[in-house]
Every structure is written in structure tokens, then in C-alpha cells.
Length: 260
Image 1 (tube, rainbow, N blue to C red):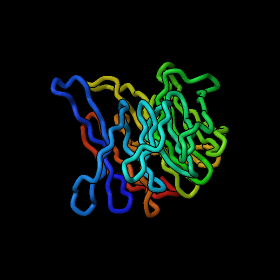
Image 2 (tube, rainbow, N blue to C red):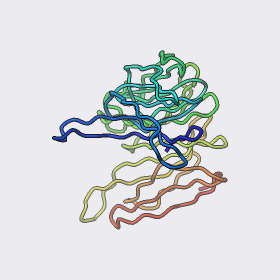
Image 3 (cartoon, one colour):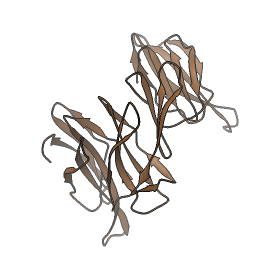
Image 4 (cartoon, rainbow, N blue to C red):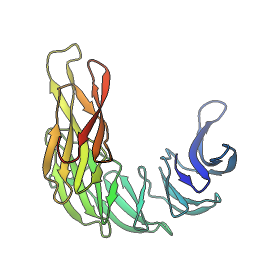
């Protein structure tokens, strides 16, 4: 739950008496005792988790809204998207099929990047949450309108110009990236056919790419029915959940940053 000073911020959804309509609000809670400090209606559909920077709370969904720590709306942009990331006085929001950069102070669009996959425009695209490191924004994207249309992207955070793209030709899912010490960590998944009661199941891999050019450094691919979670990088380790679909069991792997 994001924190600013002595307050915590959370999205609360309420349904009407017939469970036909849902309204969402941003609620500020005292970190000391949990009492409600203020409530601000969001007036948007499918709000994301809030991102907090410079004493401002940013929320995306059907729109993007900025709210100050007193609960007052500062600006609203009608172009919505996924969970925002804030850096360089800019709010970055992924959408189908790309990324928008909005001014953190007034919400005006600075640039928009529309992704292509293997030199073809993405159509029915699902991007991951972005990661921003220094002057580069990284995100993954899957285009479900086509087969073999999954890729990881690196863009200039200032201009939105493409720095590199890495295509995963045998995968249909790519996860959110985590970047540390010049390496991008994520996960991908495709389909694998092998004898089982389930028939065709997903086969995932944890991956590490060079953050400068997108080349593959290593991957972990333990079993055909394995899926991996988005990674967390901490204290020189890459932490991922490895889940066996057929056995319905999960373990946490701790991988060294430099090696698999």
C-alpha cells in the first residue's frame, strides 16, 4: 500500500444495492491508527493500484488522474491505461498497444509510442507494467491477434524513441521487467504439448536480457509445465516464484544476478 508521510493510500470499490454498478474511491488512512483521513471519488472504470511521487498520488484506468495529499484532484487525462510508473517528472502509462508519457504536473501528453512486433503494428495488445531506470523505460507486450507476437521493448524515457526490441518467437506471454546493474529480468511463456491429462499446457522460462541491447544472457527452463512470476531483485538476488501447473505446487527460486 503506497505511503506518503503519515498516510497510506488504497482504492476502495463499492457496489450498489443490486450489485449492478460499482464506484471506486481513493481513501487515505492514518498509518498510525488506520482512521480515514479523506475519501476522493475517482469517477473512472477499472482503477489501478496507485503510484506515489512528489506528494502526489497517480491512478490509471479508463482515465489517468493525479490527486494531492489533501485529497484534491489536480488533473485528469482521458487517455487511460495500466498501472502508472513515475520518474523524471513524468507519468508513464502502458496501454494497448504501447506507452504514453504524461507531464506529472499537469497531465499533458509528452509523447506516445505505438508498438510494432516484428515490424508489424500490434493490434490486440496487452503490455506489462513498465520499469524506468535512468533515462530508459522497459516493458513487455503480447499481441494476441497474432501467433509469435511477444516482445520486450526499451525506449528513451525522454522522447519515446525505440532503443531496442527483443522478439520471443515461441511465446505468448511476457511479464513485467525488473532491471538492476545493467540486466533486465522477466519471464515468458508459450505452449508445450506432452502426454498429460491436461493436454496442452503453458511452458514458462525466467529470462535475463542485457539492458543495453536486449540480447539474451541466460534463461531458466526447468520443466514443460512451469510458469514463473514477475521477478524481484534485491541484495544481489533475483527472486521468482516457479509454479508447476500439473502438480499445482510452487517454490521460490533465488538466482544470482550474474548467473542463472
